[in-house]
Image (spheres, rainbow, N blue to C red):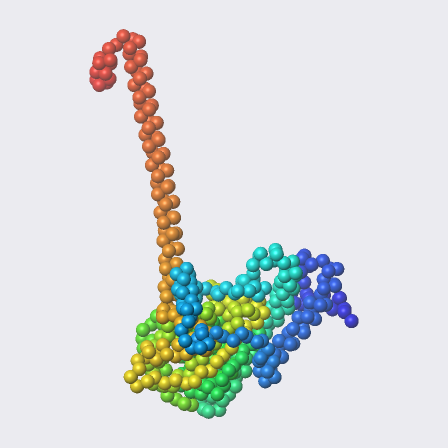
Length: 468
């Protein structure tokens, strides 16, 4: 039975009654309240079950069918050259002229169809189709009223569990037992975190799963390493961060030999190569995960791979990660990490496919740059990405240029205001001088008129004034 008094006390305990009291009438809340509360409870227990033991029960595997990624192939079935075979290249050339393929890789990719999320919302769809408006409103209520609050609670629980367990593992002595415990803790905790964000991942070709050495993958978002860690424990290397992300990086460093460094310090960059070499040669340690692009791309292209990881004499395991943006966009285009998490928690789900590719080694006379390009081509072919020969640091250059242009604009506006102020002061001074000169002329005219009336010649009057 529904007890309004008990529900009211529970709502006041959650400190939400005062906020809703002015927005929702008591009669409406009495009718809608039970459905909202019990709906959130059911969603919480379902997502908690999926996040904690869903990996064992395969509740987050093979639920969403993603379209097969496009791959290169012959246009004509006979294998001979046909006239229409050149048309895709002509279209690609015209598209390159019209739109820059590099700059658009650093912005959120637009979808061909609307997935009823705010980022891809099109007002004309709502105006043309009232039924679509109803579906969007239902989706908005489901995502913001039921999914988002429960996901926030589960995310806080999972991240707290991850930090505490990693810190506990850090107190164990360095041994094979610690490595086994760390592998279980990392996989389970990251699977818990992934479940709180409704991540649905499908792993293909598990016989090629990394066992040691170096694993390289294309980079789309900070959750790339989390998605891969749900299936295999990795040691990671990357840029040292601050804030909430830095807390988890320090906790992970306590439990295993992760490598965090500062790119702006050349001394640390030189030490990373030696640490990578030692880590890759140690078969007892987990494989180390590297994103050679060094920057997040919107999962439509692959930027140039930096050659540092490919100069090491070790086996390389390529991994291709392809996200399905129809259910949610994992690309990090927001200014802050909190806004990025908020965007993912209000999405339908984060759906992706992961392909483990055959291990590769550098040839005898092959340079590190050529080896990196060969690995990048394999990942791009498997994931259906566009290969770009540009360095990912161009994104930072573009952002720096934008900041510089903004600073120039502010400085120019300030100088214009200052110039206008001086100009107005100069105009006032000129006006004052003109006024005083006009008064002097008027006085001279009056004096000359007075002298003429008294019969005094103008020259004598002028000489008299000089004597005075």
